[in-house]
Length: 290
Image (cartoon, rainbow, N blue to C red; front, side, top):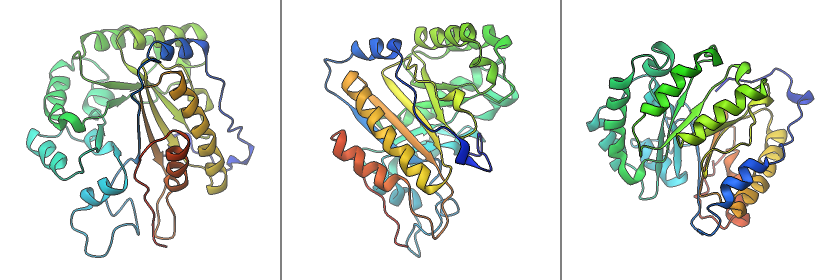
């Protein structure tokens, strides 16, 4: 994900904001329930995207990926809505506790822009629901030029959205974030429709680092900057996720957008080690042999 990348990140303030009281109050409603799940992964699993990771001669990349990460931010479904048969193939190639987070197809978000999409949504849901226990949370990302003037269209879309199917949502245009009244209206809609607010931590769009959770689920998309700064950033995220877990967070999905070359190590390695230690998780730790 190139969204929000900058040529020189040295001037960026990468500190994380204070958790709003609204988020604390929402999470506290779930505090007595001790169940917590943490999932960490990358946007894709192919050899072309994770260069230098798979052993020579690997044929089933997805299976090996699922042994080293417990989730995928599945951007492949953005370009074509998958068939039921394909979903079952993917599901059966992964380990028991693995989660898919499929991205809604661009025919819904970018081409139709939420207009007259009920049949397309139903087709996507009907196929991806076959992931069954391996379905994490699907997500829908709107184009950058989707503005708050289309709020009523968004409201109707979320109100008609199939109940019980887990959904996270992302808007990108600055007008959603730089007007407090607009942002509050948007967040209340997500809360009312039980839609998870996607948090984007990317260098050039710090306004999207919004810590208003709208469900007891956190969905974070992390865009890398430089290796040293990224490790510092991820260390702060460990503390933030621990804070939210202690407050009552039920699930967290954390996806790292990092260019992987043969000589590049995974940012997730140290991050997951700290999560396992500080949050008492049992996430697989993937390492590359450089």
